Image (tube, rainbow, N blue to C red; front, side, top):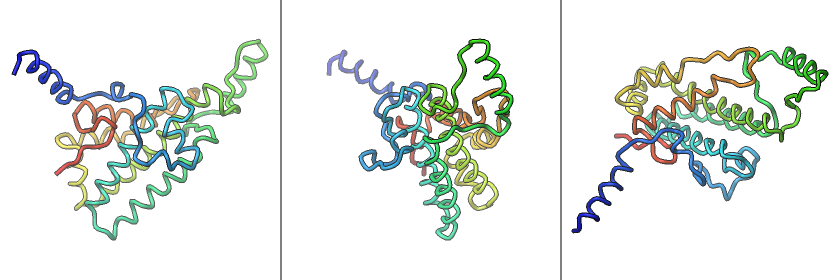
Length: 229
């Protein structure tokens, strides 16, 4: 075998040995956990990337991460407890479906103060942020917050279920081995957004979790958790 071929093999191997981070995973045409050819609803089209910019490349990654977590847990718990997981995920899907048609505001956001400031800026001749136009740039950015929020909420609920059920805690520990405590803290610690901020900083926690999991080499290139023993 030639030296050049050996070096090429080493180079290719290194691509698979070194973990990626979330930014490196954001490449076009990542497929989510469902078949985009069968997409029927606007939230599914959004996740499949129809008509959205590069920022929405994160949605298939988030979907793959959550879906793989759900599937691993559902296979490990007793069948009688799967109804708990199904209820959590069904609620998430129901709420996710609303994301393309409504603006997501975090719990501490003061919309009255925001509207007042917007009105004052308009009177001064400044450009204002139009939150009523769902096709505006700002609204589409906030749309990402909506998806993140509902996936994170479901992830937290399943995580809390595992941790409060003694025989299931080990499932979480296996998934995020060797640092499950770090992941539990990262997932469950809520970030508080400023009342005058449009963005839900807490919703971004799910991106922090995925980024850490990618760096810890726990994920496939599409964002799904690797199979564990």
